[in-house]
Length: 178
Image (tube, rainbow, N blue to C red; front, side):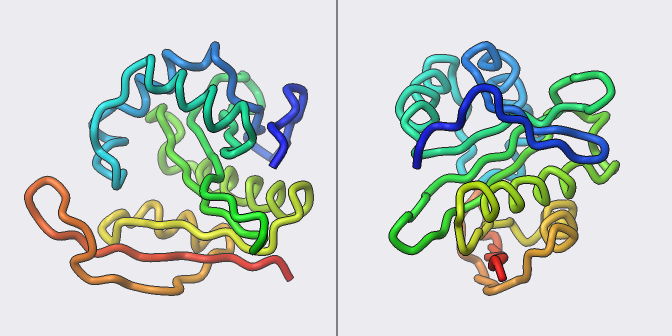
């Protein structure tokens, strides 16, 4: 994939998506290392500023990851991140990931709208056929969000991951462009 152009805006009702920049590094690292965010991630180790910059240079700048900052439409305040990774151009599919970093965004449908906007972007602009998402089964907010964005549960893996001293179930979601 080509890297996302800097002037792209994907506009919704309450939010818009804009491409992530290096200027977002400190905010994203703060969000990503927040305990409330980390508890819903499969990869739980803290990330450093340097690791995030490396991600930006090796993944985002090369088009291997398409990543946006979720912003409030009225205030421009950054609220979280949505991205697609593991892009397989041969099969026209990718994996979506999302997290909200600002508590004021929780429970307002921001995640669902961001997921819908990313689906639209992936299908209409990038021309992908399918998006998938991995969700920890106990993360009911993420499950509702993905289902609200049109994803369907494709698989349920019992005790798939060993996290924080116990086995956790994992759900695979998918959405196909028709």
